[in-house]
Amino acid sequence: MHNRIVVFLSLKQILFILLLLVTSATFSQSFNAGFTAGINASQISGDNYAGFNKAGLLLGIYTDIDISEKFNLQAEINYSQKGSRRNPKTSEGDTDFFLLRLDYIEIPIMARIPYKRFKFDGGMYFGTLINQYLEDENGPIDLDENINQFKDWDFGFLVGIDFEFTEHLIMNWRYNNSIVPVRDFDSGGRFLFNSGMFHSYLSISLRYEFYGE
Image (cartoon, rainbow, N blue to C red; front, side, top):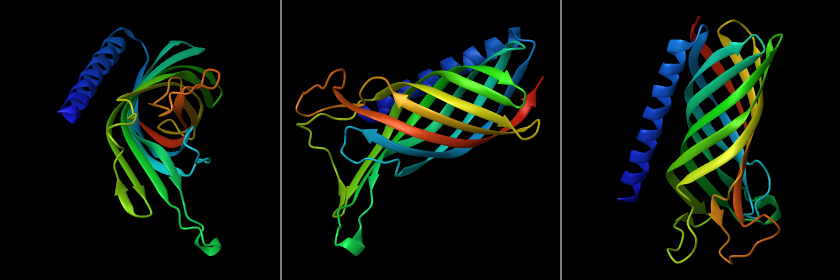
């Protein structure tokens, strides 16, 4: 039942953003669209496993409109894998292993400022959790139902840079970070404004722009 609700919410968000994009394109003099494919390097702040060691897929579609020569708006719908990972150091006798993979349908919306062949991005994203997987050195594990679970959603900010190799091929580098915790601490403790775990991840992707006017 829980998974059905999450998928239903994801579909509603996708339909809403698609409607928004079509409406924007109708009234825009400059409308572009394309595909995105890349990877995330992620960690979760607050889980005691430091380092951007978790690699994940980033796949999606995007569209953007030129508001003026110096200002552009872009929206995306992405499948984004995030989480945390700790690899064992077997040469040192360390066999501890941990893997957390959290899969999201994610909708980033951002403002962009062009400069020559670059565009500088800044904006927000909202993600809906569609799947989670945990594993340690003994195999797959489940979170105890009596402790805090990962939230069904993630909300955060992003900054990035685009570089246009050609008219249709674009490279993007981006930093993303949660604004609200994706999981509360089991102790219920708080350090200043920190009350839980936050996604922090770097993305690098190639974009192919198949439509533009």
